[in-house]
Image (cartoon, rainbow, N blue to C red):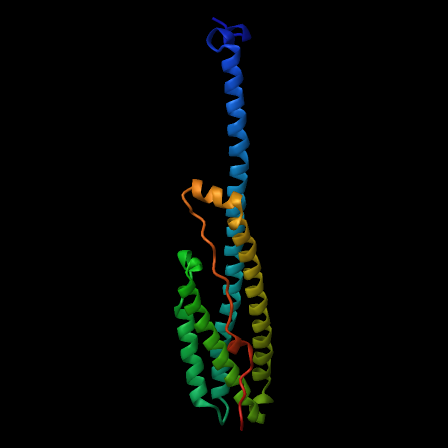
Length: 211
């Protein structure tokens, strides 16, 4: 038997068919935008992940530079041994703290990570400043090159951190919207607001060293 349009009214009266079509239209109107909002949250969360990876890559550049800086300073006839020790320990502490998964939504975990990075930056800055009193070291090409590379790395770290915070702002804003909250509730709340990365005010100021 071939089904035709004439078959439909037999099983679906016109008013029932109209109600069915209306229900499907309502479901479609709700479902399609909901999927789009979900996809937007996924996309913005993914951008945050990417920006954090970029930030970590710049931190790794700093980590890789430090052993070379320490070795170059040690090769000098005079150096601040206690400061070198502090830098080495600060680097070990900073590399031991990893931020993944739920850590991005945990203020305490983010604060611990920030503190370790701030401490490393502070001890490294003190080392570079204290070595200015050694002309023979400052005149060494290898040391000068490392200093320039470190300065460039610090600038890239700052920029990467700003880009991550920008991505977090966009993601958190989307999540706070009514559409974002609705999608999050319906899907079991898989999305959580991320914590901004904000270094302490002390870490932004260069240390003062008196000779």
